[in-house]
Image (cartoon, rainbow over all chains, first blue to last red; front, side, top):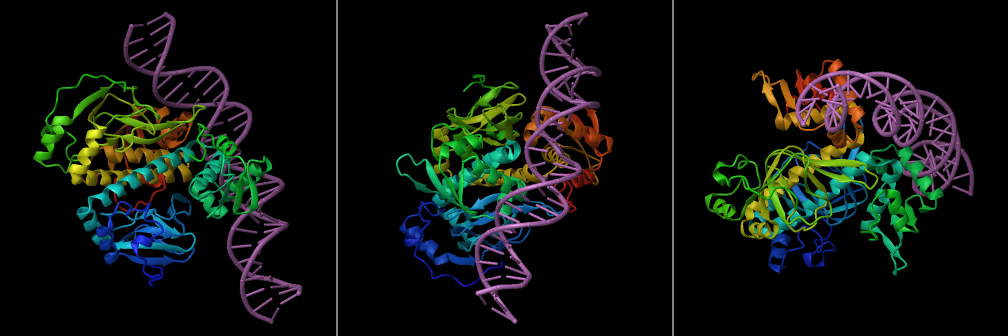
Length: 248
Length: 248
DNA sequence: CGGGGGGTTGATCTCCTTCAATCAACGTGG
DNA sequence: CCACGTTGATTGAAGGAGATCAACCCCCCG
């Protein structure tokens, strides 16, 4: 319920950068008109909370730009990240008034929001929106389960490699168009947040990245800008099947 | 694609033990008629695979009775359980032909199934089924995220306590009707499978259960039958907020 | 009686955490 | 322009939680 209340200039849905992937991606012109009447934008500065676990959340929305984290804190201060939100990802849950997790803006963040009650009605009126949300939620569930394998069974090195690959899959600037075996990753997170995601200490993350660098698996341009000269080699480090596919 | 092909006696949906919680719980009499025309039952013995990751899965379905696990294996043999399926839980994903995870029957298992193609049509025709599936999937996603916290940040003792509580929440025979602070849990899983769920070794699970017993937090009737004399005390061990609520 | 699955317990080792110091980059105000 | 404080990152040393290897027990069943 914090965050800046001013809206960026209202944008037409047809110009929206996330229209092909977001929850609204199956909408037609008539439905966009309805969305445009009820949607509103919210922006958050880096570090600002979008909502705390346990608070009421009266809106749902899509990330238009920026990155946010979904996390949970234990009383003694331990924290675990349980999701990472990139543009087109969805925040909030229809049918639930109380947030289950902390959501925090990592970088500057802009959301395209709807009042929860209105969105619930929207789902009833426009089944394809509900279908799209189901599709997205099933994908999220698979991602969460993949993450459970990483958290439960992988070593620090495998965890770190897996993380770099996951970011690469969503964010990478691919080089060498041909085989696409080289990638450049700009980490949106600090070492501490990466550790938080991987269930490690930040020191271990730092050491592991250094080790991967020493072994020639990655190169650091800056501490947040990482070159992967051989994606397949990194996949081996991640302990995944290297089933031929590059950046899955 | 294994499993016994004979069906148990076909059951009327109105007599079905899971009709109040399963994906069909929002259906009316007319919709039940349609389900009854297309549904079929499948049974699996304890230990049998329902489907392997990577295999085609041409049906979706609900657990009618028994328990199944969702898991993933790494090439070197490490495995991590990513879900536990009890009666009324849903298996399979509309829109996906290839299973993402291994599903295995833990005890004798009976599923109420639909051909995937037919179920996809069903969702289009009957929006409330899709809505119910969305609801269930969102709940699963929250459960998966809670599990990520357990896997990433909790100690062996906290993990074990959390697991016992989770089973208690779904399975417990409550005693002392008044305050409901005592519960009896019948573990559906071996120590090995519990370890698999918690991202631990089976030895650590065994030691931790012994330790909890020595500390009076739990009592063992048999190795699979566990008495929780004071649920609140176990919640403290789990490292969760003991926000008053008993068995959430 | 033998065999096997499930469970417990012990000894050792190792990977990761913890605590701590140091460093690099960056901005700010004197 | 340079001291400084701050934030993020790296590196080192020590300790511990849990894995691993291995023995043993218990109970059921053939």
